[in-house]
Length: 166
Image (cartoon, rainbow, N blue to C red; front, side, top):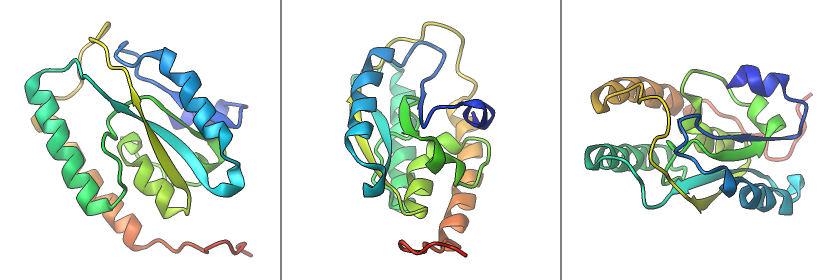
């Protein structure tokens, strides 16, 4: 993800999963939502929130629990960080500390840097290609370590509150 963003020349980045579950038709409205806000207003990201998910009941339940725990511990107000469709300002992303699986923590990390995030309901479709890389247990293992790391990053944040660093 970071390699593509570093190579990009545009000011705005749009992401979506390659398995076909995200609907590219949702991107124009998300881009419009982000572009309506002046960058000086602080809006750096619009994240998708999947409605009518086309996943198994077990996957939906695990996601609901994981998002609830993450939201409670990180206070990021994001309901669905696993949704792959997002649009954000390239400059804001490049200010974030980078690690694998960062996509699940973009809202918390954006807030850490003093930006704001908004969310939009998006379509969710049946998986068209490939297969999930994780079981619920496998995702839990990865997420626990990442969650601990992000909590540490948040505890070490120092937001200059509008002051330029020298």
